[in-house]
Image (cartoon, rainbow, N blue to C red; front, side):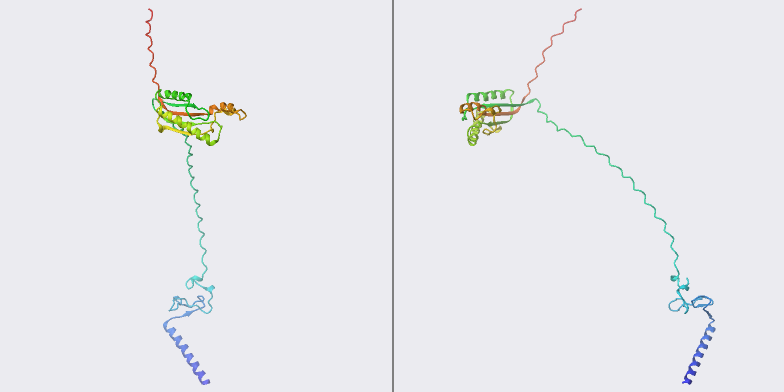
Amino acid sequence: MEHREVIKNRILSGLNLSAAALMMTAGVAYAQADRGAYLVTATSGAVRAASYGTCVRTATWTPAQATAECDPDLLPKKAAAPAAPAKAAPPPAPVAKAPEMKPEPKKEPEKKPEKPGTLPFSERVDVPFEFAKADLTADGRTALDELFKELKKGPVTMNVVIVTGHTDKIGSAAYNKKLSEARAQVVRDYLVNTGGLDSKLIFWEGVGPRQPVNVTKFCDAKMNRKQLIDCLAPNRRTTVEVTGTRPKPAPKPAADKPAAKPAAK
């Protein structure tokens, strides 16, 4: 055993002497304590590993001994210069106000001008009837004949003719409705057959006692029958309303003025 230890020590001593001789032969000298915690050469600075190119650290190296040449990432970074304050955005441009819109004045509806050379025409006639009857009386024919004479003056161009039959309030509603329609039809036939009016322009209906004459509001049921029948007589009628136009009357010629007398000399 002792013989083996002696041989080992001799071999190690020989290796150390050989390494020292090689380093001296290459002319390389290393110093550790004078240039920090990195292995450096006397001439070219820090020794770098051949495989990675990084500096070779000594056993006493600590992060506090890092240098800019070997470990720049471990050095404290310089504080960045404060950024320039952002410029305040310019104030928004004032929004122009829209001009106030004034409401347009209301236009009055245009009145349709009347046909040149004509005048509006309107005529109403009440045709009387006897109690509970629908036959024309002499007074009824006279009223209608007067209407015909008026229509021939001008003459009248008719727009519409409305014929409405009426009754008094005596009797049932159904009876009076039928009686008023019969009175309207009688008058309509007389207007067409005797007066020559166009049947297409005539509109007729029967309304019974629904439209009494105002003066009959004083007719009371306390009256005896004859008095009540006489009192309600104005309601037993048929009204005829004619609307249309007629020509304007020709203007009267101006009277000739007498010749002026010669001035006295």
